[in-house]
Length: 407
Image (tube, rainbow, N blue to C red):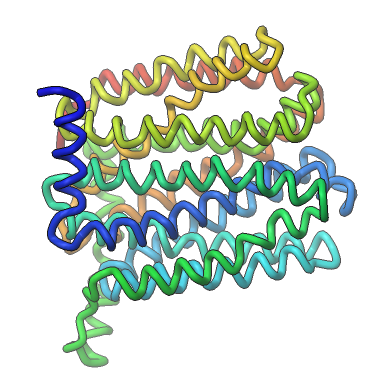
């Protein structure tokens, strides 16, 4: 079968049966949420100037965003098991839009940090609901569907940071971040209007109490399942990957301007290019998971990234950095593989709770990465930090060899 035929067949399967409109709406909301979040690394120099922040405190600000986006995913997953996913996703976009309004009007670092925490909590309602609703729409092609939404997330992360950098330079950093808010509100309306209603409208108050108790039991059961080799190893792999990803993205634009002597605009475009490669990598990673299994697809994704981290400290100039950035960006396909694997490890009744427990556990612990990397940068050891990330990536590859192809 030729590549063109395979792609056409995959697109037809994803779009057919009226599911394509829902997929586009969900993916658009995800793209804006992720793109808006990646504006923060671009405007860190402006925040340092306006609020007098060091790299360490700037890293703490990013850590707050990631941490609150993580801890909300367990309750978000439990809500996704009990309520209408489209309502959760629409609420997420509106809450994040309101939080962005608070960020751009903040009058002090304290308000800035509080608004950032609210931003993270609003974001946390979307990821699990997105996965559970897609798992119901695409029972045979979850990997491909998740790959598409993740690729759309990377489109947002590719496009929004350069736009934000241009607006910040021409107008103010508040314009570079604030323009995302109205787009999120529109996305929330589209998600609610086009995705299927899966809410249970027949329950009463006693049923809700029973479901709440069952959800807590499900969460405890998921923690017990972490002791199984497959889920336990995958949880560790996801934690290490998220630690690397959050540490890298928090300061890559700053690294490019302060260490590699690129202009702010060049750095923002290269940062966007990092996610642009993910637009191609993530659907391919999802399709690879569906066809060749978890182990081979994940190792193929991570090996180039480890090489890229090793090369980053020794290259200079725009074009060599473009090549190294492309190598590092292959790691963006990891999520399509790991989350598909985990989604299929749980029953439909506990899928949201299971994903919520694991994503909350891994992402909240990994959220320490940006502040640690900020300390590294403040002491002038950015290059050594990237070598360490390569070592951690090698450890992830070694763990992957211990994993089965499927649950």
